[in-house]
Length: 229
Ligand code: DX5
Ligand code: ZN
Image (cartoon, rainbow, N blue to C red; front, side, top):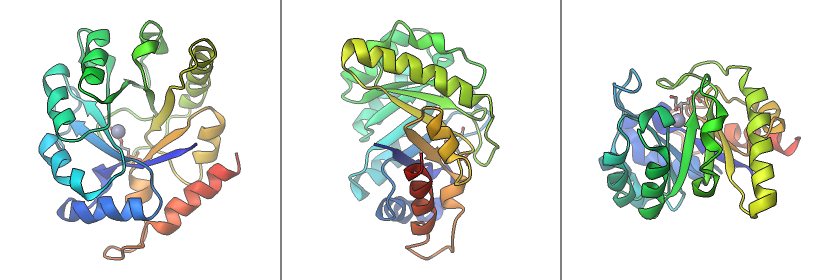
């Protein structure tokens, strides 16, 4: 029921294929794929070509987190490149409902991402088109930042909205958290209501480079913490 999604932002890009396969072999569930455009966020990362290149290497869902503005132009390219889940920030799209529809019409699951200061009410009128709600627990743009504690209360509020919606619709929306998730705080974050956890530096920073089993112990430790909740 809990999803662990290592962010390849902190992987060794010179060995990206192996880095993807090794985290999945070590027990991770999704590959979190951070797309930054040096416009919506002050950093530049990877696009559909890289998604297409890793697609044949794993059966795991690829969770594309778009930190770009505008959003719509690039959605079909990621769908064609094999993305399974596409999330975006409401500030990046002029027409949030339309963008969610576009993602779903492209055959992917759709999600909205909330920055630390972005209010949750952006989700209220589009629940039927949401598969994932992603709360940022850092400001987007960089790996390795510290978890912002106010996210815990915000997760509880998002959990309440999602549970109320599940009661009336029968649909379960995932509640994902992204930024500063570590072995020592993941249990508390889960208790606040998250059920999917992005971890970049915590996973890819672990162990010895060149060892295909280097991620077993950190992913095992994250799971052990989740088992205690
Ligand atoms: C930040 C990205 C995150 C980032 C998380 O803008 O969206 O996915 O890679 O990295 P850590 O886990 O190191 O905070
Ligand atoms: Zn992300």
